[in-house]
Image (cartoon, rainbow, N blue to C red; front, side, top):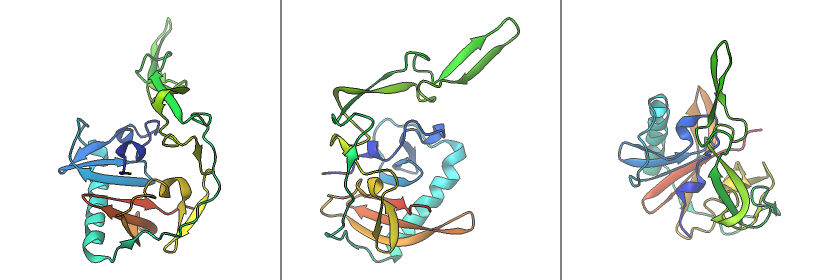
Length: 211
């Protein structure tokens, strides 16, 4: 098993600048706002959007600091996960096909023209993503990674003193050489707990599940 960058971002996120991985300072980064993965630069991903550069660099600096100064240890082998439920995205099939949205033709926006004016609004069929996901097909479902089941939303697991979303923790479970440590980041003057992880040339974090 290897960390899959496709699992660390949400293509339907309302923030268009993190709907796909991006390049910054020689790194390829993907984030959902709740989890983040950093890899050596690769692929044909766009550069980081200007509005996100400051935040992304702050996170990179924090991860570099943690990697240098904090004590990492192997992921505990006795992590207990809750029971899974059927994946809503693929209906338990483990397969889900992503197609261009038929309403906006992949633009993510709808143009409306009246006798008075012309309007542009986000497509509600695809929520601005430009594509929709259909159950079945040949592609592996990204929501459940092909397993057909997921942990119930906001089911938490306590690890190293931090409450984590079971589905986010599942992104790194099964990696035999992964190391983790628990510490905090400073966000808008607040202390936010996070689980940091690293394996070979990859690193990242999973934010604490907020109450």
